[in-house]
Image 1 (tube, rainbow, N blue to C red):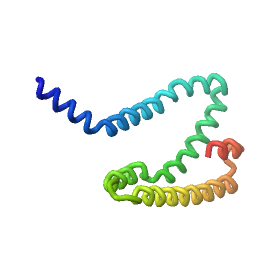
Image 2 (image 1 turned 180 degrees about the vertical axis):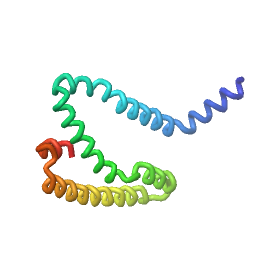
Image 3 (image 1 turned 90 degrees about the horizontal axis):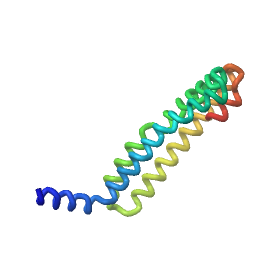
Image 4 (image 1 turned 120 degrees about the vertical axis):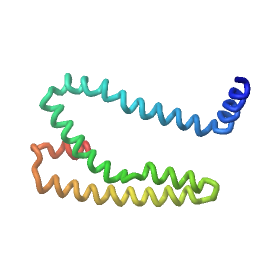
Length: 133
């Protein structure tokens, strides 16, 4: 049993930064899952069902564009940074390329979004859609 504890202690000390990052990532995800449990009932009570429905539609409509902009960068960029973390200046170039790609996708998404908003009148809620976007 003592050998197992020593090996575990060695693993923890060698990977302290990775373990800390993992814990904070789980906390971030956990909080992002818990907030809607508090926020949604409050919004329904405050806005009413009809207005909350309009908000939910606008938020879902804007979320489609968020999916387009994210485009799997969270996984692929993390993988590239982990693979090339020992080489100097590679992380900044990876981050720069990701930033330019996301900015390009945001601009195209905004252009498409405003085109859809101007062509189709969606429940006369253009302001709400723009705010959620």
